[in-house]
Length: 181
Image (tube, rainbow, N blue to C red; front, side, top):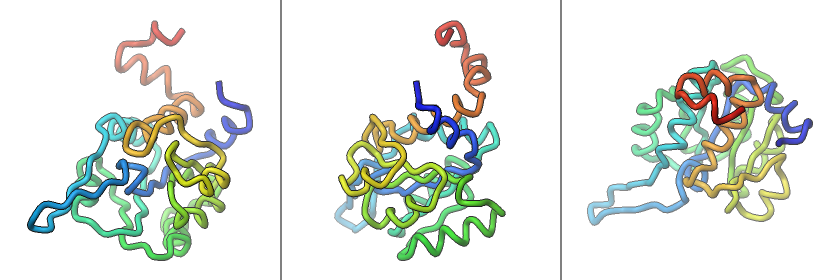
């Protein structure tokens, strides 16, 4: 069971903003002999993002690197707000707020490295993946049980769905309601 303080923060969230490398992936970058980049994404993380979007939550990607693979994954998940090559994440985060007419307390952000700290310090609910740098873990509201690219995103998606009262609807949709009583 989550602490009341965390539940209170989760109830206010309208958008989940994600770093990519180390959060949506395990941080590995695979390149073939032609220099084409590949990344491993977790299918359960992706389904978690689909579920929160289905329940009205927005999702954005905010990453310092630029990769065509990220564009493909975002399209697959119907994430339209993708900010790549963000050398100053704090500046891009301000643009996301303005564009969506949101306040920082309505945003959850997941990161794993020092470049994420400025945004993590601004948002309503800050999250570090289990294998994030220790400095990042000290900065956040919550550290996931799961590692980046291995269920950490899904973990937060389920927490959001539960805190915002959507979990019974998810349970009914997937016919597991009797398992959560």
